[in-house]
Amino acid sequence: MQPEEIRRLIEAGLAGCRAEVTGADGTHFEAVIISEQFGGRSMVQRHQMVYRALGERMGREIHALSIQTLTPDEWKKASDMRVI
Image 1 (cartoon, rainbow, N blue to C red):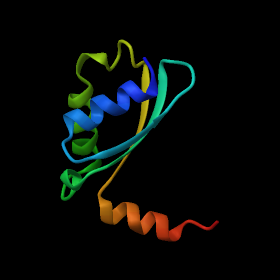
Image 2 (spheres, rainbow, N blue to C red):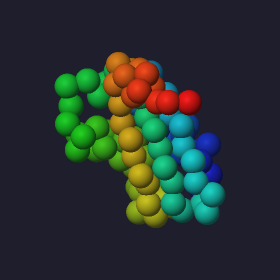
Image 3 (tube, rainbow, N blue to C red):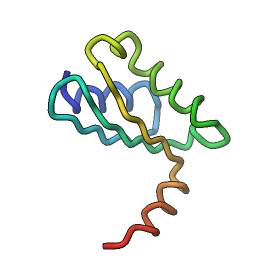
């Protein structure tokens, strides 16, 4: 499975979200997902939403997925704190 395929699945499963997925070996991936839907939800609930979007592919084609889930406001705050 390719990172682009995972990105499409996440974005299709979480309407209105923006996802960036990386991973070079085809089974281990990292994803940053930004969505208004994450507002008011715990980290566990956010991750469950992403896992639902990926369905049975988790644990099969996707062996490992490191997930960072943020609301747009959280993303902006994190971006403002980055030093170039």
